[in-house]
Amino acid sequence: MTMTMNKTLPILDVKNVSKSFTLHNIDGRTVTALEDASFVVHPGEHVSLAGSSGAGKSTLLRLIYRTYSITAGSVSFRLANDEWVDIAQLSDAEVIALRGREIGYVSQFLHAQPRRSVIDLVARAGVSRGMSTADAHEQAGYSLARLGISRTLWDVHTSVLSGGEKQRVNIAAGLISPPRLLLLDEPVSALDPENRERAIEVIADLSDQGVAVLAVFHDLDAISRLASRIILMSRGSVVTDGPVDQVLPQLTPGDVQP
Ligand SMILES: Nc1ncnc2c1ncn2[C@@H]1O[C@H](COP(=O)(O)OP(=O)(O)O)[C@@H](O)[C@H]1O
Ligand SMILES: [Mg+2]
Image 1: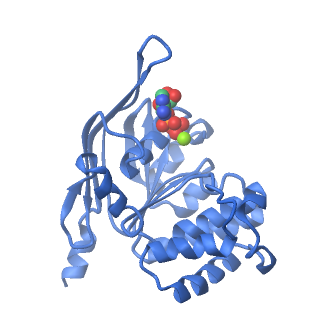
Image 2 (image 1 turned 90 degrees about the vertical axis):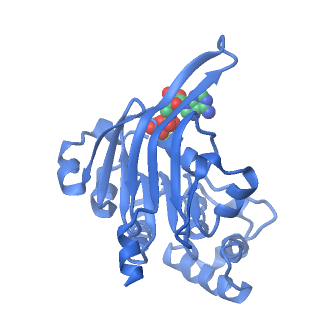
């Protein structure tokens, strides 16, 4: 009963968020990347962020993950114990504790770790989210296989992988024992059609597991297949927020630029 009720509560409540950057090497000029953006995300929802290049999509994801500090507004997140925290106000130590089990972030780039094998990198991500080493290795192998990374690559160092292989390893690490909120910034941008298909299937499964996903994809096909809702941004502001069947027909190719 309580579980069902909690499903209807948002997991993320972004309110009146603004972000400006001061460009110290250009006369201290200020760039406004986000202006008064507000929206909520519920568990199990897959929300696509659309908008032309420079609209503020990546900045928004980085603010939520707290790679960037916030200029104004609040980023309320509901913890597993139903307590709310404002990510914008957390200490750095609290942010680190929140990452991993609660919030994950997958960008288009793998932070290659030269001395770490592919399977170790993915398994370690699972261990950091509370899995046992044995379970994490088993799950890592399963995820890599699903993403089309053949067994012959599991023991090589991540630095020798191709761009597309790195990206798939990155997805496997980001999605093993998935956090409650997952932020994706163009995670399939370097993949060939077959592997992109595999990645999209893995990402689609997240919604069935109740994971809340906030994602940027630069193609309408991925958005139409994955999203339950679309937030269209322009110049740092939310201009449209609605169900995929209503917003998708309004999008132009220019709205899904990296
Ligand atoms: N670290 C930064 N320093 C200065 N300006 C930034 C920084 N990150 C983003 N911006 C600026 O913020 C705006 C939004 O960028 P971004 O969030 O990357 O857009 P999108 O992901 O929608 O293409 C752009 O004008 C960009 O130049
Ligand atoms: Mg971007």
